[in-house]
Image 1: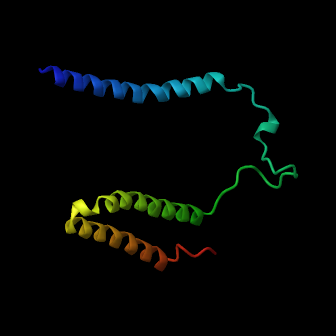
Image 2: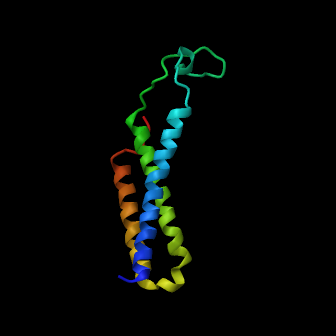
Image 3: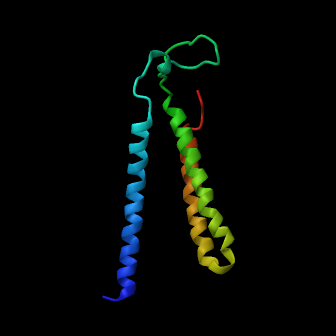
Length: 122
């Protein structure tokens, strides 16, 4: 084996060890440093000084999650389109066709959600 291959493997192993080790250290430290005794006031809902109405555990309607999911999809879409727009001159017309297909799929999904009345809040 060549020296550069061994160096590459060791570098990858180091990054994997750091990637696994840092979250373990962070979770362990947070577990050690947190307050261990819970008290009743800690679990109550804070209402800006007003008396609490209802419980602190509220069930959200599933439409809220659908709106949030659609937002995330279109937010990530802009993240995918930005690098393409920056490098458009070097990519050519094939990349334009790929982005057209990508946008068509997203617009079709939005149309489907609209037809299924997912976007209507009732």
